Length: 150
Image 1: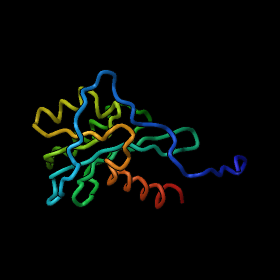
Image 2 (image 1 turned 180 degrees about the horizontal axis):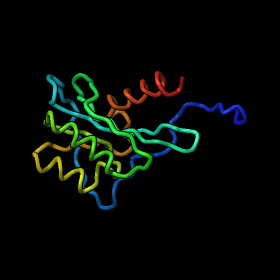
Image 3 (image 1 turned 90 degrees about the vertical axis):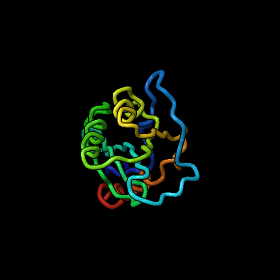
Image 4 (image 1 turned 90 degrees about the horizontal axis):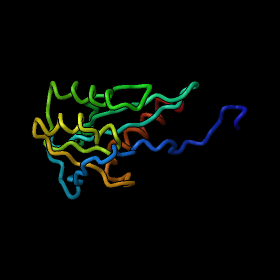
């Protein structure tokens, strides 16, 4: 299988490493009934394997629809591409709640300050709780199976 470049499709790199001493935010979506657009947005990062390494994709979605509002690609896991996606979407709309994983990009002071400054409530998934952000995880499954792993 290795000689032919075949491999199983399963989760690989762990992308949700929190920034050191980051502020912990509660998970605000438990039991929340999504009733309208811009009530809650979600964001997450995934990786896409290339011949020479990985590229990383961040997406911000409206959890009501779930419609992709903004996305960015990067060859590194820095916070700048996540901040760029956030700035792009905030030009047109704002949510009441913004939910993310606990990755260092989303727990960084720069990222959370943008949300706090405009009074958006920050929600974060529990450690290792993939189902807390199931809408974005479903997006990654669709993107990978229908576009990447053809």
